Image (tube, rainbow, N blue to C red; front, side):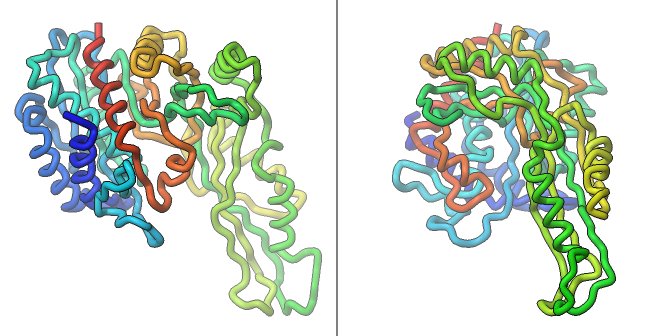
Length: 413
């Protein structure tokens, strides 16, 4: 099958409006997409054992043995699209050498590629060396329970994986400025995440009475100090050290910001409801990503101590710990490197710690070797459009994505 046929199949999946909502079960759109996938991949659904977890799915492809099974992951759900698109976000349009639409890159492309590879190999009467599990949650974007439910099911049955591969890093040429070499950034772990509310209070009053005790001003001073989080410490994990070593070895340059420090983003702010009134209370919501040197609670304590001189209260709204870190020296990581070398001979694999969160963090009790990697070249503009306007995937790259997963499954030993 050529890349254009691949594009048309992915476009059919993109047209399914599989938008997840926190706290809600899978909408009919998820079952509509399952019907689409059953039509696209009939051999997969007639050959693999299928398990349903309230809309999230798991399929088991029986291998020549059940030792050292592997898991390939890609979530079905997407975030809402919003306005301003030049192509219908759920139109699955194919134009200018690309498939356009919400989920085309995050992560229906991987879901398509994994199923397409299984479909092609089954038709060739291929049987993998080991059991291959395909899992796909319907609520990854809202931090739901789909992946957790699947992980619990597998743990109860004593299934343990030699390799789990989920979304994460990708192949890119813009890993750092002034370097055009191709790097394969393979995530070995995930930073923790915390949402915190910073609150400043006052007696309020009329805006004509300017005061340095204004709660908005105090928040502004503290935000200026906290900035993007460098004051919270700099940390260098073995994974970050190895990333820098590999890049330096091939380029002669050491990338900046290769540490595993804390990053802080400001997402919401609220003060008075009137332009002439000083608020009795103002607050800012921040989202912090942090290495395993912190937990959500200890990070909150640290920020609380820093905010005290500004008379600012800090409350932890929610958070999760950093994930365990898988080794870049394991047999599984070396196997991924070999697959990368076959499909992308010029690429240099580098390990790193992912700032975002994925479903794979739920599987730490069923595998030591969990990696986060979208095996495809992603352009900087495409990466910026994930969760944004005009998300898209290049048709040519879609074929390479299929090639990677086919090589991975075929080369299992």
